[in-house]
Image 1 (cartoon, rainbow, N blue to C red):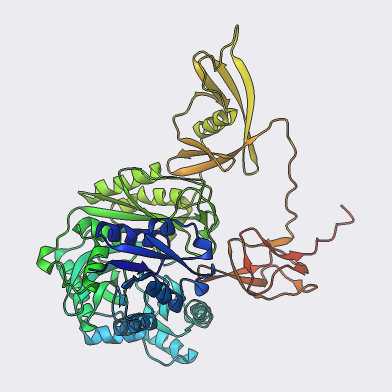
Image 2: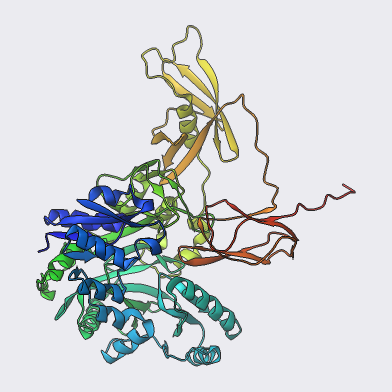
Length: 636
C-alpha cells in the first residue's frame, strides 16, 4: 500500500478521499489554487502545496504543476477525483512517465471511451446494446441533417467529447435542426475544444440508469445500478440505488453488459457504464442502450457504497497498489435503498443560475452522511462548481429512505447564499417520485410547482421579528408594573418590510404580525452576516433588522442596465456605444459552468455605454451594458 498520495482535486471529493486515506493510514497531499488557500481540503490534508492562480487552467488543469508537487512532496501516487484531469489520458501518461502511479484506469482505456462515437463502435463489437444513431466522422451539416432524417425525429445532438449535458440539444422538427446544430457545436467548442457531434434517437420516456463497475486490469465486477433520472438540463439532481422497480432479469442483463464493456478495454479502477432506458412500457431487458462510460469515480458513488457496504475509494487505492479485486461478483449483494441529493449554491427561481457568496451558517443533521468541502465562513467562488454538499441517506426500503431524505433536507441549514435546498425538498416529497414513476422529464413537467418560492408564514415572520428585538436573557425580562410592554419591530426581506408588535409580559414574549398573535416560535433561528436567518421546511428565509425610524428607501433601478444574472466569463459582446438595438437583440454572451447564456435587450433603445469586454470575469449583478434613458413624453 502507498505511504503517501497526492489528490489532484479540490472541494468535497478531495475531502472524501482524504477521509478514506486517513482511515487506511495513508498520508495525503493537497494542492490548491490562490482562491482555495484556506479551503477545507487544504486544512484536512497532511500537507498542502500551491499550484497557481484561481482559474482552473492556471491550477487544477496544470498537469505539470501537479506532477511537480507530487514529486516534491514524496507522494507515490496521484488520485484525480472527478472532473479536471481525471479523464485526461495525456495526464495519465505523464504521471506514469514521472515514475508515479495514477489511481485510475490507463491512458489507453480512457482514450477508448473518451469520444462517444468511437466508444459506441467499440461497445457494439463487445456485444453491448447501443442507441440507434449516427456516430460517423462526416461532420458536414447536410450529412448530419440527413442522418437525423433517417433516424427519425425527435433526435438528440450530442458533443462526441461531451459530458454534463454540455453540447447537447434535443430537436423535434427538421426545420430546427440547423440552428440546434450550430448552438450545440458552439457550446461543445467552448467546453471541450472539440465541436464534433453525433446524432441519436431521442427516447420519449427515458430513464438514466448507470452501472458501477470495478476492474483490476484483468477481470471486472459490477456493483449494481444507480438511477439518475431526476435531472435538470441533463444535470443530475437526486440519485438513488438500486433503481426502483428493476426486474431481476434486467438487472442481470445490464450488469453483464457493463462488465463486458469494462473487460473489452482491460479496465482498471472505478468506472460507470451509463445506459439510457426506454420506460414507456416499464423496465424491460431489451430496452436499455449504452450511452457512455465515465472512466473515473462518479459524484453519486456514495449511494452504491451505502447499499453494498463497499468503500470505493479504498478499492481504488488497493487495486492501484497492485491488489486484485477485493470481492468476487457472487460476494456482492444489495442491502436496502439509498438516495443522494446534490446541494448547490444556485438561484432556483431565477432559472437555476449559479450563485456565489460567503456561507455564514452551515449545519447538517447528525444522523445522515453529508459529503462536503465547504464550512461556515467559506466563500462559494465563481471559479468552480457551486456544489455545497451531497446529502446521503440509507434505509431498509425505498419508502423509508425517501422519508429519511425529506426529513434530512428539512433539517439542513444553509445561510449566506441562495441554494436549491427547498427545491430538493419539494422533489423528495413529489408524489410521482415517491411512487417510482420517474423519468428524465419529471422536473421539467412539474417545474412551476417544484421551484415555487413560498412566502414566509406568520410563524417565520414572528421568529424574525422576535430575533430582531435582541432581548436580554435575564430573570426580569418583560417585567412591568401595570400592563404589558409594547414595542414596534420591523424586518426587511428584500424590498418588503414587515412590521410587528412585540408584547412582553411575565408569561413571555408575543408577536402580533399579519393579523395573528403568536408566542415565541420553535423554528431554528440564527444571526450571521448581519442578517437573521429563519429555517422552515428546508427553506432559509433571510431578513435584515430594520429601524422603524429609518424610512429612507433606495430608488428603483431605471431599467436601463443589462446586468449579469450570475458570476461568469464574458465570451462575446455584440454591440458598441451609439448602436440602436431592438427588444430581443443579442447584446452579449456570458459563460458560466461551461454553458453559454445569451443576454438580450429588454427594450428598444440606443446603447449608451459598454462596460465590459470579451474575456472579462464578472460577478452576479454587475452592469454590463447601459442603454440611453428613454425620451420623456412631452405630453405627459
